Image (cartoon, rainbow, N blue to C red):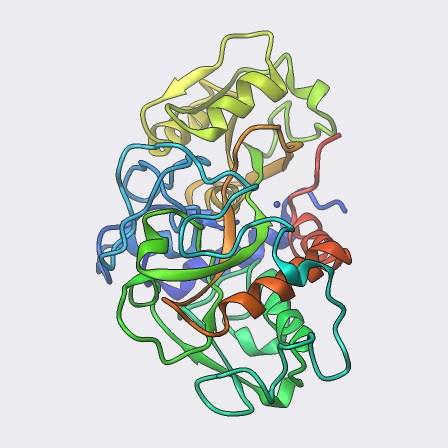
Length: 363
């Protein structure tokens, strides 16, 4: 939902992702205006994947885990937050986000899932799987702006899906596609796009989605030297002065999962939250994990991701593979994702590329 951003931010994001408190859930985030704003604020938002999620957000900062619908007219939604898409049900036009698709129980053969093989799939180019991603592509979702190297969470997921469908790496073609063009109803020149797309009912009117390959988690951000920087558990957060943006999933999680002893600060925007954290008015901010990577890298000096919070029982956002509306590949893409979730591959990739990149899961 955010567009192109200076190379220096990509470098900053990489550096911070490697330097923040490493340890062992989409998406830095910021919402932007419709396609290709040249301002630094909106273009810097590309790195933040929660800007690719829906929800109200200030310029240069995404809604902190807000669960709302996003516009499909080539622009990220800046509408007030509404209800998130539950993990148990995908929007109309998308494959169900949980087991229930017939492929969830399928096992891949050496040449792909049953009924979903390079010989049977109606791809853009016969025998080739064409996968699109925005340019630039940022860490930790990709690495060194090279979606084809298999490094970074989404790059690794893309190749895992391809392998599950029976495609070798040499049979995968990577192309560039802008985020706004991908979510528009225009015909696609790719088989699927992976780019921190939040599954929403509004978007599903224009495009198809696979089942969710990433459940967007919430995280706590602070700065080096803060008393929170060394926190290892949710209990370590209870005595801190924390805040979150109004009307967001992040605020709900702050109140229910952390339940701090001090009344949380409610911010009108994430920009306001960053200012108060810089000024020492709060000890930390709760935002979605994609936004946390962005904040720590681009908005804060010496920003630190304390860690990801345990998932609650309420509805939450998911990222899905994006396909052309009515694509003959939608069902098979969903089956592949279901199997990768079921066999533990997605969890392993999340640990490797997100948790170990500086967003440990708090106990």
